[in-house]
Image 1 (spheres, rainbow, N blue to C red):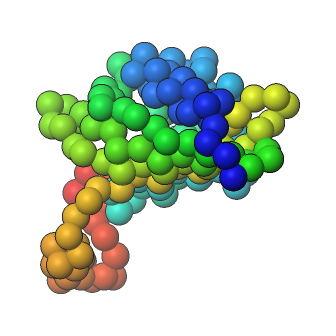
Image 2 (cartoon, helix red, strand yellow; image 1 turned 60 degrees about the vertical axis):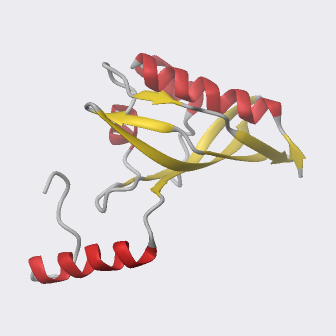
Length: 145
């Protein structure tokens, strides 16, 4: 595997398109492959539907700061890791982000993204126990709950 400036540049273009709320950039940056998936930090954020994936690019955009993606590739597959700060409303959230990219028709397109929050295991377990007692199914609460 090699450090990849091309994959790093693709990640930075992805961030720029999200910040700008630029849905026209979506098809250039995200693979149309049915296996493409976004996994976010909220319990309900497991997105494979293309229209839902595209929604993240709609205005007004998402503020993302403190970016410094590290990226690698081997053949037509690339991956990157970063620790950007994202803003939801006025709240800053320090995240950990990984992405997987595939070279398609000469362009790097994302096939997978996972965003997580650095939460100590004990705190995560306590939170999940709270979900189990607050829902009859033991599943996490629905988005927005």
